Length: 126
Image (tube, rainbow, N blue to C red; front, side, top):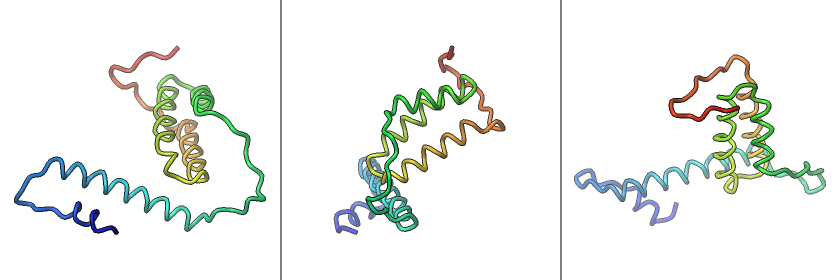
């Protein structure tokens, strides 16, 4: 770990430092994400380039299809949030890890036993 990261993570309990706490939280989040990626890459090493690639699609197309498959307005609304979160973090993860997350969110949205309640203030879906 770089010296500047170590210094940032050191805490002086006698001095409340809100900006420092936010910086430490951000560094911790980045370090946690990096560990997740390293663990994933250890378990699933990159394959040779000879493998066939999947067809390309957009995040909007993924969101549209998941919302349609979700089966209820609340889950369709959740699909938007899940795809948005996955899209934002995808640049920091290997493609196969993003694929795994897409499969997990699909599984959750299609789980008939999972019936979330509508959040207050959420818009009605047609």
